[in-house]
Image 1 (cartoon, rainbow, N blue to C red):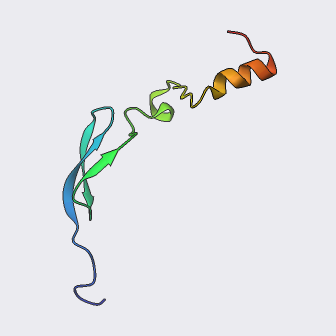
Image 2: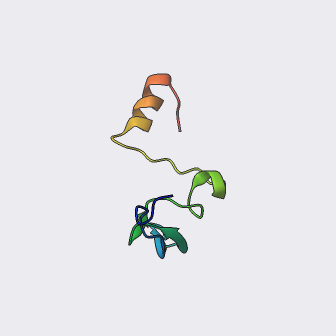
Image 3: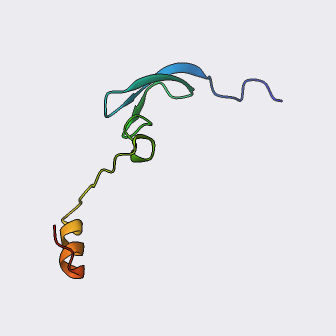
Length: 67
């Protein structure tokens, strides 16, 4: 292996949008996450519906689904 070609790896604290923090090794100085294992629907078992521009309502109107 060639010397001095690899980036420096150091321990950083990753911060999620939900407030969860944990330490990981990374070449970056700061890690900000939008979703982590504490708030991801696959790991929590809770489904979050993210509606962008009324697409859920448009789908329900189009296919006759009522609340």
